[in-house]
Image (cartoon, rainbow, N blue to C red):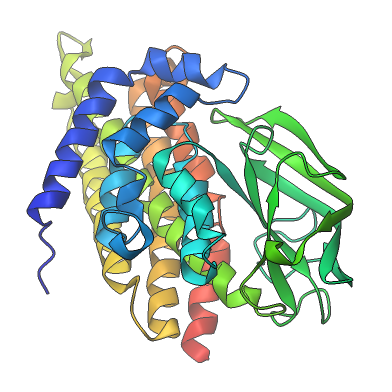
Length: 377
């Protein structure tokens, strides 16, 4: 199999890397993090103009790509700048709409690609951990529409999102895969409230509460009770994006650490000349390449027709990224010494982001168990 990027992907990668390096430096990122939204609406529109959002979706859905390697190219570049804008949720919500949306619902996907609206996935609940099937938000029939009651946790950029993709149980027990329905809910719908807060690695999230939220029949995405497979499809693409973002962040942490080892002097020589530190850095470099290989494997398997093959590759990549991301964060900080923990040094923020990526959409322990369970299916 040929893993070399096409000319279009190479051009997209080069353009996004230049844009992030020249326009989205660390100071800009910190300013954006302090905005009310936790990101910059202006940069959100600029990423849309550059085609970064469109590259996440297939041409038949109004995009420019949509394959696994298109996703990795975009998010690896975003990871290098610790970009805060909500492209991850745009990918997941947009993928679900592209997969099952009707003509009216796909207008929202057009808005996402154009950068005129933002969307957020509201799937996690206070008790659910990483289990997509543990859904206790209820959806009950009301005439030809629906009424939602319940709560969602850690909804990225949920205070200011225009649209939410919400999982709710319309049938079955609390942890059944069957009986989950997906709904598109507009911000400002009566009965929907959001309580926002800052995140440790930058940006903001919100807790959502649904109190007798009345929805029309056109809010249901796909078939009632059959939303689990669609949710798995959308979050699978999100997992690949997170893994690629982590590789971009690892590359920057690596480069910063190598530069520090070359310039920091002790006993009259650069500390990078000490053999013990060379060995530790060599281990880090090898592990980063292992992470990159896992992401390549997951990208190649993203559209595989066999669910077990696809999902095992994604869980393997997420497990690998979780383990290696933590290692890179720890070693980079330790090789820098005390300065590595200072707020003013970008490295500390890369380390925090790598640790938090492990906890998004399932940590390494969750995905190791999932990988084993899928192999026994």
